[in-house]
Length: 121
Image (tube, rainbow, N blue to C red):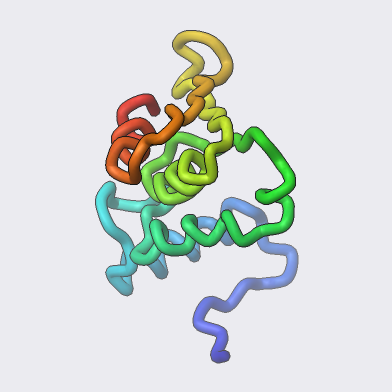
């Protein structure tokens, strides 16, 4: 695989993030919200990538999973609920409480879980 972003040895975390954000924007690799700078980018394919979290050994061995409320992590939140695990989502800007604790309803279908995942976050 060809390297498309050159990282200088000793580059700061901020420098690396800036290069990645620039690359994503220049190559139109992001979905809404844009621009991607200063956020977790909602890159094309993020939902599919997040859905694969359920394949991780650590995922199968836990009953609770913490997933941040950012748009590109929506697929991970849905995967947690589909697996009938408790979803912990940090409260944005800590308005009330530290986490929103979302427990999937028994017998919920995929569409109900999707609504639960996005509306309670």
